[in-house]
Image (cartoon, rainbow, N blue to C red; front, side):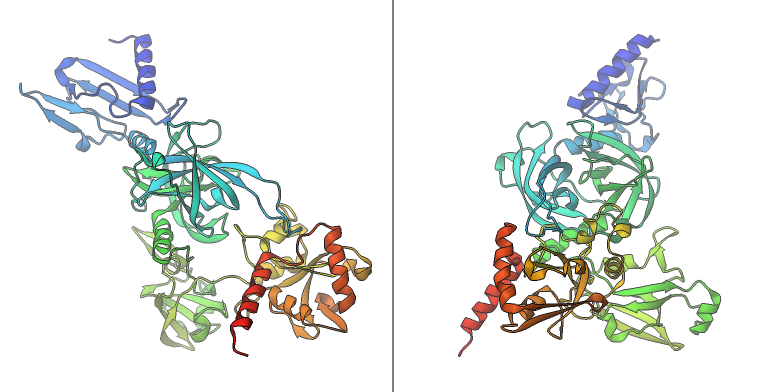
Length: 577
């Protein structure tokens, strides 16, 4: 019988061996059953300097001749025959063992230097800061990580496990809606000894996954284990989109982002966010979303986005509502309340149509469709998994008659962009008036409580209005850089620009063209609330140079407007006179 001190010493020795010798717990050779009457080791969920180890139990004895783990799955034990008729048994890896072995040669730490734009002063950036995350190697000598790990990056380095060297990485593609990015490393030295991970499937409820990464609290790799709690569309915080996500009870902390969640010997998802205010509720991006992102990049050479029908729908769970729209008792579906004018659905569908089925899959009255074994998921998931320019068959009920329509799906952009990572804000300055397109990042400059502290009218339009034409923007007068030319107009900031010299403004580029085309006389700008600004064009043009110099602003317009001007000039020069 082993004493407590001996068992403890062996337990600690084994835990240390996990860091440097992951293949087998006791020996590099199979264990002989007759070599000892009884030998057992227990290791509770315990953290070391380099890894976090999950619960496991190994034993060998003459009686059972088996090696068990905490899952008690003897069907996967490995039995070795020997010459004298005995059997040798080797313990199989637990989920933690597998995750550790795979992670050591594939998971990397990502170091990012970022510099975010200042949307109140769009001609300059905020001070740079350093962030860290995780990533892992996939096929094609690429590294997969989260988009928010490298958003607004100016410099990216990666470091593999056990190496003191950091290697320069470049962002090959980034999808902010799905919070995924692909990095590439040119150094051949980096790829020596690196192995890629294979993508698996969506895990079932209560299946175990091991999250591997570099969370805060230490510098070495960490492995934490959890089980799948829920699979359903979830709000992706970074991209503000609704896509499928997997909820697990493993802790996902800052630094874990971009690391793999491993199930068996394959990747079940990518860690990307947790639920604030709750303990051990984390989320991983599932494999279908990952594959959709990667295949789009491989086929088009860049991120292509996730498709949308462009519909806003209402459940039809109320009996009287269904009767009003002449739905028969066996019919189920959702009511169309809004249609995006830029979508192909706007061509064939109408408000108050009932969507009964999508690609032959019946839609329930609550907007869900069947998913796996007795699970349900919103039908938006079926739409989002379509590739751009693919068609979908939609069955609708209109005035009591069923109709079938074929609709081409495309990613759709909102009137007011939800995010604008990796690009500088657009702006145009004339006579000290700073014009910008309305974006949610602009509203976010008002602080964490931006919904309550930003201008109410602008906020409502940002969240609710739909575009009427391609390329449309809501242009606002964000602020005035004070000068005698604009004195008296200082209270007219944060209002939408409606017209310039009687012409409705389509976008910021259109506004700049209308202002520059004024030539002589007065320039009239109509704002929201029937406010009006009138300027003498020639005096205002002279004042613009003076104001730019005073505020050390390098240009009166953003680089995207300058580039468009150059293109227009080149086209004019190329056209025959």
